[in-house]
Length: 218
Image 1 (cartoon, rainbow, N blue to C red):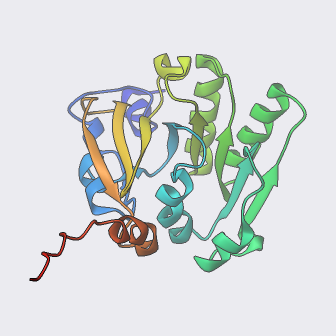
Image 2 (cartoon, rainbow, N blue to C red; image 1 turned 30 degrees about the vertical axis):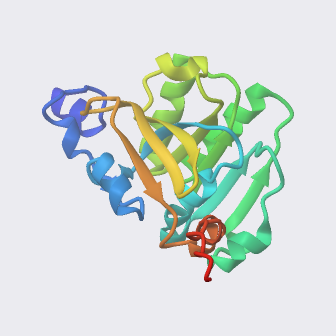
């Protein structure tokens, strides 16, 4: 394979070129600014987060933008179909898989990515470099994306993901920190506001504002 072919298939990393890799808007202007255009258009993104802090809300614009099938593999809880339906995502666009072993999980993930008709959300406890490379190649061949969820401070930090983010709960949304990415420096952080998409999430906080005490008359 020639150097041009290797570069076209993203098999060689070059610092001055990687910033031009295709991106897709995240749906949040502040996150697009943090990621220099949005999420990678293909490849593997790792999200280090506690469960149920808003990680699926962060990805909701991605789910809404794509007409492909979204496959959820080993989610920690059964997805709320009503929540997805409220945002225009029907049951026919979602598929939940629960393989019997870690080996079957990685095999199913690879096949889904290779199909070219789906993107994948994966909750998997362990992965090595060779397995990650297989999934990255599957993303390239299927022009697909994989979002892999891990606990905070997980040992997966050393793996060469296309993008690696840490998510922390915040009263106004999520605090997102870049742990690792191609073509950019880690460490940058932004508060991603959910107010525009879900204003009801901040109403409770607004109602807790304590008024100034009234002066006594007389």
